[in-house]
Length: 291
Image 1 (cartoon, rainbow, N blue to C red):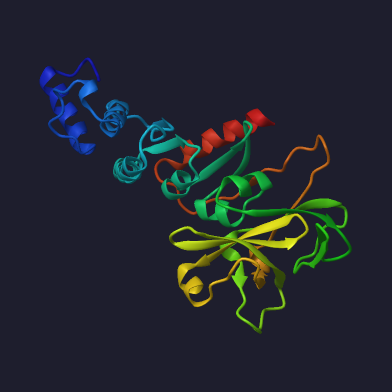
Image 2: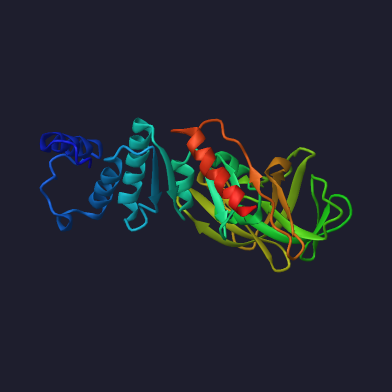
């Protein structure tokens, strides 16, 4: 706190901060008398006391249990938006990144792998690392054949996208929830990848059912079925499934030659909470350091 403030002003400022973090009346308590969630909120209030232009949070929720973490996640977002302070938050929790951020910077061994809005990062991961790190992603190693064809294990797939003929191998990626299980004969669009395989596992996950389906030798994929669809069609282990994936939900990541750096993808977001030039300056400085 500013030493130039009078005792009365400091007391008023402390009470105001405690109100902001929804902990009025705890000013007389010792740290050992506070819960983990309360201690984290008090730490946030201490950081806000000097009215910073930029707030850095280094995994502030990592030591808390799941229920407290969800509650504080919401409170931090509401407080940050109310105060309008540009905030950089470091986290290894992909759910926190997707739900709390206006813009995500994904780091891969100290290098920026991709920058974008949560939706851009999730729907259009720029590298296989980003695809693995954010959400669930099926990544199938394959060998590029002529034109649209890719050899996965012992199965040749005809993809609804043109493959770079200068690339020998790569990873075909698609998210489990983007796979449609076809119910009998069904018309599909021309730009659709058709797959078939045998159900190896059926796992109830609450909001959805995750199937593990073998589509080629030593090659399994995960398929997420909404519970409503699963109630109408309950695949059993060993059942043969016909599946479809639209072209816009397919990703192909060429395997770079040894020693060649991974490309960086920068996607500009529509909105950024707080002082956008401040955040841009931080990102630009990291990019320059990497060059």
